[in-house]
Image 1 (cartoon, rainbow, N blue to C red):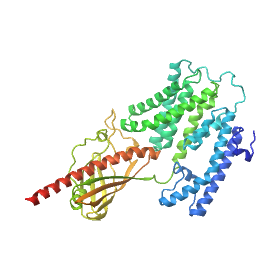
Image 2 (image 1 turned 180 degrees about the vertical axis):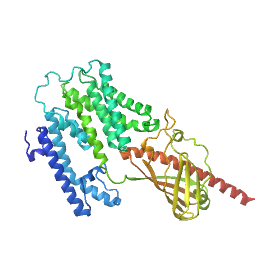
Image 3 (image 1 turned 30 degrees about the horizontal axis):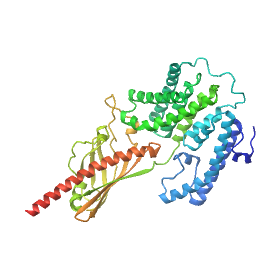
Length: 464
């Protein structure tokens, strides 16, 4: 069925696969050239097709925050009409394939839009009434236990393969892994489980959770991951697996089990698209800032001495460090002033910190030229070294800021600037910020205790 330009804005109507692909390609070409013109004419920068894959949303991290915000606002405003047309095209295509219209929402979600695009490109038009005989292969089990076992038996190996390709070959811990793979696992497991016999939503969700959970267990058993990282990934994995299960359940319910074979291939087709586009992402990941502060009952001159270097800390009592997260043990410094090298020794090795600002007794700022492993993983095996243990959470700079307070007291503030190359960045920042704040508190509280002890001793001596 042909579709006219004016009909792209309307909610009604249908569109077949061939016109859908033609219009999608044409609109992408128009949008790319419009973005390229706007970015060059307003900001003097070149915009390439690969720029769309640098971040989940267009953004240029090498610009200042103000410039980045302006450019993002311009690109966002220019994308609104294309976003509307894209959703309308998806609605028409979903209607033509007799799939749930709410799936058009996936067009607005990074990575998942590739899943939707793959589905709409392969699922044929459905003109026959809903009472046609099922096209599901006879070898798919009808029993509840048999279909669940088949769903898990098919999806778990595919999920493991996707994990290994992403982490061991592409060295990526990104949207394709944590969003795309878990969504596809939930979608395909629910679709297989309900392909022959109608299943309840809770059954589709249950088989999805089993598939996602068993994938995690296999990663642990095969020594590809440790317990702590799997626990951190569990909330997003289970949530996206549930979304995928709901989508798969909706597809098999709407089609009343007349599910074309192409639908089962959608995750297999979508995953290479997800991994491929993510592999094209260029540019550094965003820099995050974590700031923690304590108040010390001692003047800045006393606090400064223990900031520059401090004696060995007692064994940690915090639960987070008992899980294997690296924790600070002591700090040593070689030299004095700018150019001196500070070593903050952690349980997994030393941070090497050349001093960049030595403003005694107010500010000590340093870069970080060497990072140890961020944690020691829990695992049944003696040593587990997943790729994310090396270079995926990197401290770049740090500082201690001392501010005098009334009454001879000091506000001691520790700041760390760091990057991590795990996506979605906002989700993993929740974990990394909590870890860095715990490290800060351990150091700052130790410096506070040493400083207050010295101040108390000095006061007692002066009274004598």
